[in-house]
Length: 396
Image 1 (cartoon, rainbow, N blue to C red):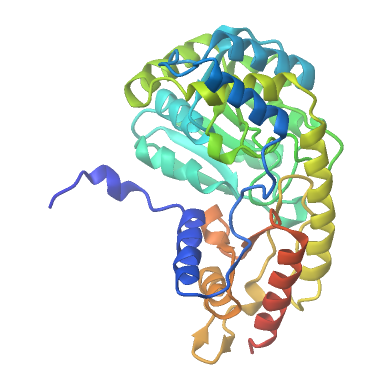
Image 2: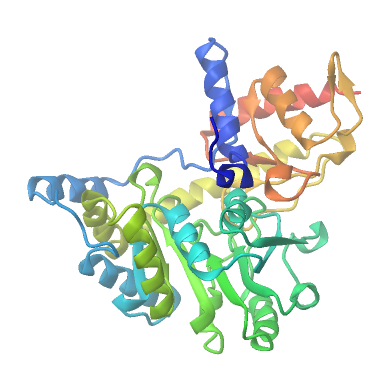
């Protein structure tokens, strides 16, 4: 059987692969603690669920507009004004089936074959895969531990070429948890002002899960706002991963291009989810902030636990719900038949021996780290780290 060469341009996301391997071991009766997935372990807030039930009773069960209900677009515009001080109109908004589709729409709408796309590392696994899908050229810019993996203006300026079409980053960042301050963004903006041929995708899906005192969007800088595309959604901040709703805010021509593309892939997003999203975005954010407060407690716990392992250093995350420890001190060590040559080996060792799922840092563009999620209960985190610490102690 001969399939399209498109399928060979990218690999299965490592996050999903580890989740699959964990499920397979559970099916064999093995107790696996999942510290790999980026999914809040909280239930969707009651008032949002009630809005969905009401939408069902009111028969919101028909095809939806490709770009989303007007009421939802207006709610998203109000959210941007309320939370970010940004002015957008409905023509600047498109709703999609998850933020991943939002990213795909934008990337495939902007890049042509061989266009250069800059991605600072570490980065979310899907960024590079979508660029490869669009036949663009991925150019990674290695982030440094000493700067919490955040890109400096000098590093950005050195990476941009005449072939650069797009820059993709997230703040708060998955997997490092780093958050760019207003001043740090301003330094990057000064570089973008000198390079008007570069578009900027700002992934802000972890906006509300922020421990640094507030979120600041790069779209707040008027000099480059027309080239900034904000990606956001409901999955992280509202514990709505399975509801599948993402959205973008961008200049009208980009939104129209995304809508044209989406019209051939999925058409409009689920009607019930859209009605629930209106309630989520226009109601009190206290449930989101309460969830973030719990994540901050877990962050403190995992930092204390990871520091018990000799030879590991870990940047303190200012957002999201991951730690991204450097583990290269354990490369070359072994336990029984297990030889740890790289982060991939270490992640598999922890899965098969400690029965804890993590994700190799190579999936995120940094092969000296692993990603550990603290989007799990405190009990599971403590038991998971008990196993992890024991497993590391066996490596010599």
